[in-house]
Image 1 (tube, helix red, strand yellow):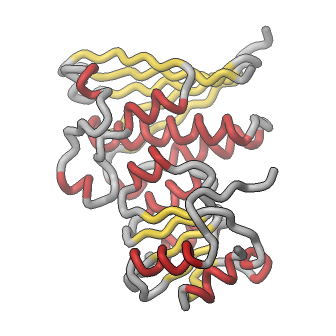
Image 2 (cartoon, one colour):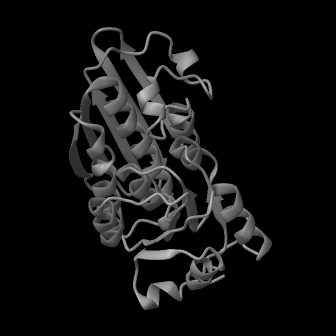
Length: 141
Length: 119
């Protein structure tokens, strides 16, 4: 297999206005690589949801993307508060986002389930007080 | 339905978009103020009607491959948002109509939530 193409994105958690910028750049990168539009859409939505989560809950973080012939792998890493109960967090409609986030159109408790829905594989590793790493894979073949 | 017809039916003001972009066809639409729901339930929708005003509306539309945004209830996007929409090639319209009425007008004129884009 040929070597993976990698992309790194810093997710600024300072203010909500910029949330989503990394995903917009990611989508542009994937278009430039000539990835199938339907796959780009699924990967972009998953990344966007993850990015928004990092801004809402973890003051930002980093996103690393690796594209091989077989798959797009997205790793989102933050040093936020961690997720105490991952099973609960995966339930549709469950959210710990504050009210001000809901008034911005997010925090409906659909982020993580949506990320799972749009990707082929998803793993969450989280330690309370240390941070969370979400690894998602979208198959290209 | 063409975007220019969306504009006419809703008596909307054009905030961003060229003549040629107004000629583009749209096949389905969705109305929501919750971007979370747009991201979760929407598939292949080319028009988003919303009363929410922030940059994430533009980015959400871009993520979902939408091509037309309609702000309802006389909501107006900021110049920064319009610039962002322009960058992504999105047509932006604004109407005085409320969400229910705006959706109803488009729906009864044939723009349902289930239209399929011809590939």
